[in-house]
Length: 367
Image (cartoon, rainbow, N blue to C red; front, side, top):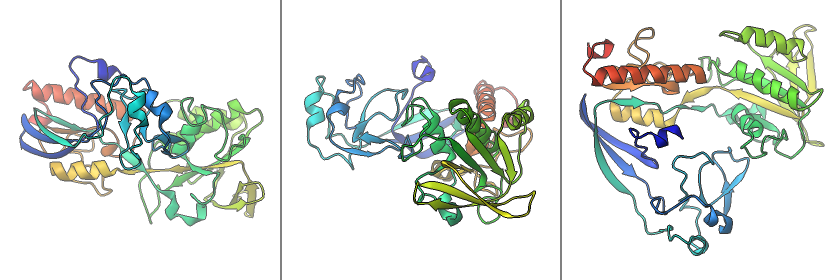
């Protein structure tokens, strides 16, 4: 929101980078602008078009936990807050055109291209979460009340599909939750790296459940619990003292089809016996992978990839925001898994390096 209001920042949305030519300091970036099918110079974001749209489809932003209309804004804080038509789902009934008093609907729009010249490029294409459907032992997505950590975040969010009310996908209130760690992370068959944020995110989510539901049971099934950072180890200890259970186990999940409760099967470390426990909800703490956007922009820019498929930094200690190409910088999960504070720190570092570079100053990128 602040970026959209800043006089020196131009947001170019619904657009893809097609190619990058030129040289450091004078890059020529070719862009493809996708059609909105709405004249955004006229649209005020009033939502009258949404109210009359008869088509409902799964909403990517809410991870398919809540539907959206064929004409929609991605989320309430989108910048700019303008509506776009999903042309593949739109049936061109014309109701949105009738409802829009400003005449902003334009189904004849087509893609267009443009080119801009820039002095430096910062790649911040993020990542994606591991798809747990390739691990049958967890029953995702066949079992309705087994969700990913990102889906659980949307359930907890006040602006999410349940408006922050802790109910599972079938509508039942949540009184017991199992968090299963290292799903797709630290796994020699899939992703060998640690995704860094999952352990503490699960503990935070568990505390939210305990705060909202008096007497709720929260179990954390972990491989190795990693609580790196100031105050994190103390948070683990406090959570355990307040009733959160931590069990070292790599479980599998079955289903009680009578009440739709997932059943976690694990080896109890203390007794050495295989144990079953039923929960209202199971949350799979899925790790982070390189996004398709990261792979695409890496190829366009000709950047190196590291062993894991992320964009390779120039040096792991003093060159985390630098690439092997002068004038091209990286920030966030495109360089490797990290949590929000580390992403913000790296973004600030990249901005500082860009400022030094464009000002003709020294630093690693001028070597």
